Length: 441
Image (cartoon, rainbow, N blue to C red):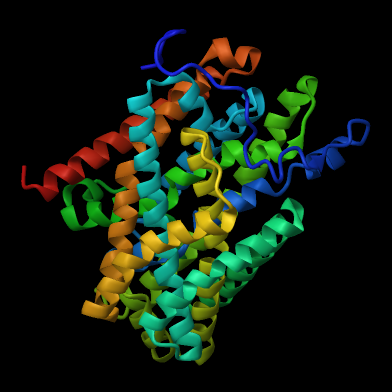
């Protein structure tokens, strides 16, 4: 519940999100509508990266190989929810000039803020864990680097993040968008090779009651949900949209353009996630291999089952691109969460090493003890953890999106609020059902 004025910690002097890029991209006021719209293209692709990271691969591979095309409906529903929630993030970031973590710090009591911060950090570490393992697997598949060594080498990507931040947000956005298009191209070729039955693919986008009655299917479905709608992206988007120099009178237009940017980018992410699941269903499920959940196993089986070694190579290249891409947004989200909730500002390299260090510990332990067999389970578990953390980011987002006192005329339309709260309720119900099943109730 929001606190009344004077209750809880008082608001501190306004600080800006991601100060190194804040209002660094000009929006030409006298230019055509097309040129102004293009000025907002970019943040959506930073967000879309989190919707196709290696954690998505594990859940999509497991879901496609075990249940065919059935869970495509979950991928579609999750993506639609993500489009709505990210549009609301863009709205409150532009309307208030504050990110979600800062808004929580302004309005909630300190104990609530600390709890939300802690949960957000857990979500970021779970995200980073998936990216770390996925990148290490790609290095092993492409270059023969041992998995444990690859896990340790991924700590060096802090240098990549620093270099990208130094170049400026536009360079960062362009590189991320290019890598996403590379991933999409890899899977477009793979889909052509897999030759799925498109009528069954289309049927898979319609929900099935079996998803709720089959505990194994529900577990993977919630993993897909957690891998698609990611908590850290909600914090990041409210901050990164403030990289555009928007004048107060142009905020309504800015909200429209920023929402369009994120929606288009997430449509591309949906295509990539669908392609992973469709490939697994068309190749593995149709071929009787219904227990393929490990990325390494999928890589080994793709070439003989598709009949071309190129399919396996493209699979590994796309995985590496996704891992490199996703590592950038996890770092930025960690910066937003720590600065917003706690007011602590760390050098980016230190922040990155802390996040990566926390993620490396379970990855190294599991890799050393279980080897390849444990990585798939750890990847899927990380995505389920993300789903369990999601309500603690979505509910504050919805509270602020409907806060007319703060947003004024820029408050979210009623239909967005109704659908947003319905999405929040669905997430809570599914998580509750999963927890009940896990503890045997």
